[in-house]
Image 1 (tube, rainbow, N blue to C red):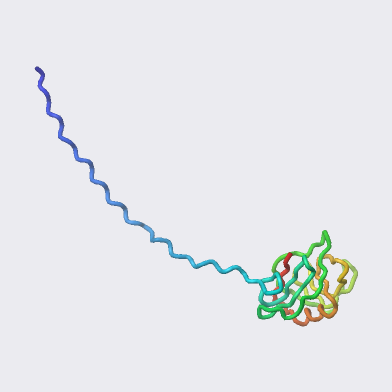
Image 2: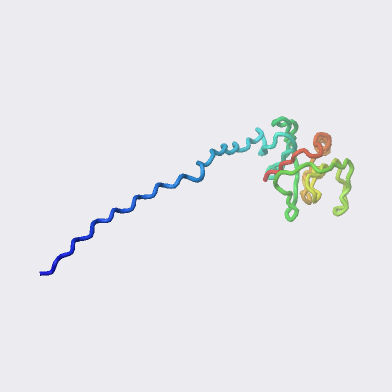
Length: 157
């Protein structure tokens, strides 16, 4: 009869390796996102100083301290193909008695807010512009006297 060899002794399972120490800390808590902008009551704008324009209603306001300081006043803006840009702009320069060479016409009380020449100025309140915001003589004069270079202009749709 064949001899039976003894069964090999059980081999113990290797001991589990200890879990590695975390190499990074938990992420730091992030600050809460800023609250959404609050519009100035009676306007579509959220700037607290400067000028606000609403193209869809042909209205504009001057704003100081987060409140309307002048307006609403009627406006006209860019005709199709010459749409007034929407967004936030700084007042760049002002010319009391400017003249438009491309359109051969006066632009009294021009307050420019784009480098391409878009401005608030006295102009027709019945005829659309080539992108500028037309105001009455009184409103254009008030905007010219009130707004300073660097002040904000917000143009809303």
